[in-house]
Image (cartoon, rainbow, N blue to C red; front, side):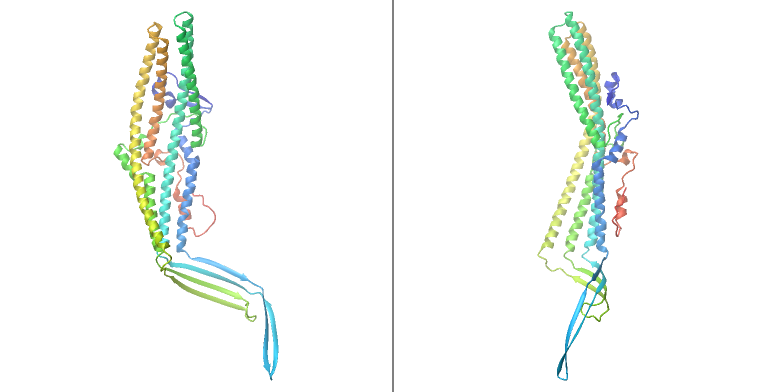
Length: 472
């Protein structure tokens, strides 16, 4: 894979790599940040795993709804029966013994139906609890989507940054090699000392070491890109901030984060889950009323050989009133109430974290904006300083070390500007994530959006079936 960076003064000021650097393997097509986000949204295994978790959460609702529905059981039996009877009778004072024997194959079939009429509203509360779990899971999924998209944007910008730094360090080595050649030529004619040559050689060795470090950072960023987005980087092009989708003030950012951030909304639904669990636990202390119906038909008999067919039908109403079960039900109620208190505290914690994240992200974005202007001025000043030092060195007013130091300051300034450009874009995505708006819909990504409601409605009212619906 070959990397090229735009050359010239514009590269230093606008950061050629982030503005016009390409990461190329010979392919003609370009890959934008939006394309990378689409690929991450479709391919990231963590996101796809969370979608599977949400589909599991969906199944909790039909499981709870099953409490409203009857339970039907079919039974059947077959047996081999042999009967032998010895009878005694007295006739005219004499005992007579009669023996009768035979065998048959009795069999029967039956159906039993059980319907719960009242169970302390446990079924209704379990259903509400399962639905709240589904809603909380959707917010967790939305949070995972934001995490993956932010990680993808960060990986994309990190690779561009490290590509730029690698190119800058390589160009720095080229400049230092030329500087060393010129210093040796001047030493041969007696204009500089051996010390100047040694300084140039030392600085070149340092530059080569920096190239090796930059190469290692580049390879790391490339591996992270592949892990996060799911494909190899191909011809990465410029990326722009997404400030237009974020709130315009810090106060608006805090308000959006504390009300719409997925972690906050998920915590709210977790409180609803805990409230329903308290009601479910309290329902165990209330009576239970069930209706049982049984139909059974039998052929032959295991007792009397003369019986050929029997038919039975029973309907039974059962009322169970718990009086004392050892205290476990009361412990379950107290446990549920303590859990509810914890979930309310967790909600407060989530809101505080959302507020802190919004303020921090807003500050980082403002700092990134200011840092770009500062580093651009730094690059301009470093270029002017280097040109001046070189001219002064030609007339003997500056030493070789002064030139080398000025060259290194310019390289450092350009690296700082590359980093500032990367931070500017990443900070805009971070703020968007901090207020809960980092989504394919907000960014306008051209990708089919995963709709968690599709699978939910496919399974919610299903009375049976073993096939797993697609849900996409």
